[in-house]
Image (cartoon, rainbow, N blue to C red; front, side):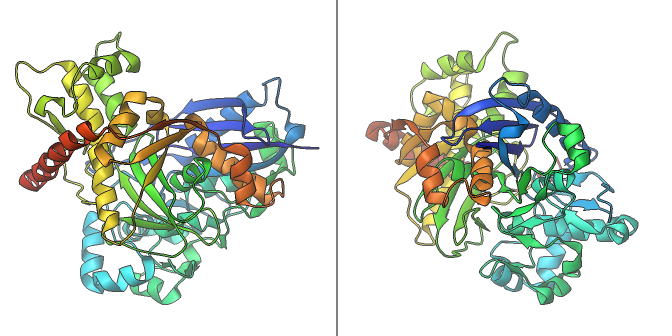
Length: 494
């Protein structure tokens, strides 16, 4: 009997494929990189065909593991980065690169559309502001700038739905990624044809909606030949990477909160009703009947990666940088970092925001800059938590996931900044595990999501905030917030 599950994660810089047993233990995993393209200022795009090639390579690698056989794969779940707009024709051929979540080329279209329809008209249906990074403005940009491509586009797909299509031949739109489409009604989780018409779009350009754990099809003969998976292996719709990571961290009930520490940062608060905030992100959870109030930031683990590559020595490892940061006290002796490495998403939504080190002087060291970078990412998390509190949603505890949560120092900094207890499960696999759990529920391996979480999630450590450090960070947080307000607008045109 097949009792293994495969999770596929389409990240920003690489894909990851992992195979799990019923208890959530990783039996094999593989990662494959692919490039990002920056053809013009504000443009950040990728080639979905390169995602597929990388996924195929990774699947073939994991299937070579002695503990894994295609015979034992009961189902496949896929998660992916948000806000893609992949134009494909009727045969599933990609017609152009997709702008990804960092892309802001549609900023003028977003501004003009909001001005024309009014913020409330859009927000009342979508539960999200009409920002250029979302899917809808990118669809409108394609319609305006490349009408020939738009005309030949049969459907616009998301990152996970593209891979699902390549595996099964079925075009789908999972519910959790629906939030990127502003004619997706957030409360009813259905398409709103009137809203689509107001926006100048049509529901015909997007695929049928599916619950995230729904089996949409089986691996085709062609996909089986390329990947090594068995023909007929069930594939579920999958979902948003942040939502799958939230599930994979064990967050599936109201009030639970996930803290994300991947390439980007943020948080996801689980709720049993659609509570929106104009400066945050609202999406359906991959768990039916639940929603996620999210904060999504540009600054995350990618900040330290950038620092290592651009300002560190060739010999520096992440552990070396962490040891330098540990020698510096909380607050970095007044050095404050704004982690706006590609503009910023919530809660400021400013594509012109720029990263800044403030407070440098001759007595500051590389360690001060590393620790300030870590603290800046924690401040961006706190900024989103404070914004969520304006809706009456309170958070007592965070469950961390992503590569950054492997850092004991960085996780403790986040606990000290936010004043919240942070619990850490098996962080490296949370996102792919969440995708695999969707497959497990979809094929009936688990009765429900509660059973799946109970059987697969293990908490490895806990961080409690240090009251003394928290007081220091409260002062640093005020500097952080004031810095942005004072510098706001200076980044435009740079």
